[in-house]
Image 1 (cartoon, rainbow, N blue to C red):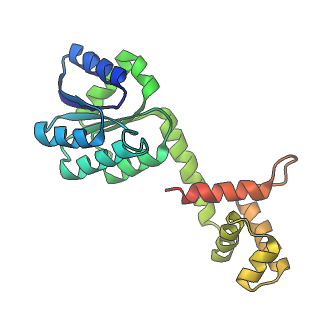
Image 2: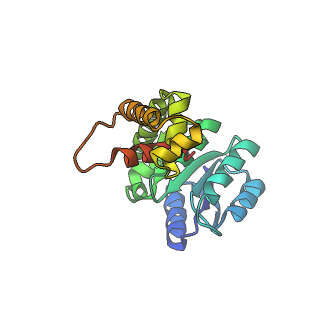
Image 3: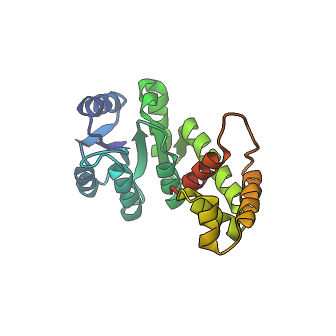
Length: 217
């Protein structure tokens, strides 16, 4: 395959280039940032782009944003995204565009050369390969979102205000209801979120965390 590599870590980039070359692939370019990646893809039209999620200048999501742009501008280019940590939100965004010719791999997997080269071949041939840890996190997040969808509009309002740090009385004042009504909504939503009373665990905090996770898209 004709491959372009994008990773800001010089040693990893060089290691990937050597590994792929020795496996019989042609590395057309090995670059360190998203801008150079987009230029290389435009120039070479590779079969596969191996892309780090986080690259300069902010080291947040430059790589995955570049991957999304490549998918839209040149859908024939297969994408193999590398990540240091489980970041299921990025994987979900890429899958939403199209799961074809897509791989999302934790960098630790690269150490298993045979498995990594197998993923390269599979993705390059049009397949989909997601790191098992990423798949697990996607399912967890999806399940939590479905649970939150079971809340009534009023319960979601109450939970949203809880996430803002409002007290029960402050929530009641905001919604123009009684404090007792707020307490009933909170009790109901805690039950729906499967947060029964447990010693040493703050149910209110856990409910807010689940709400924030669902909003982090």
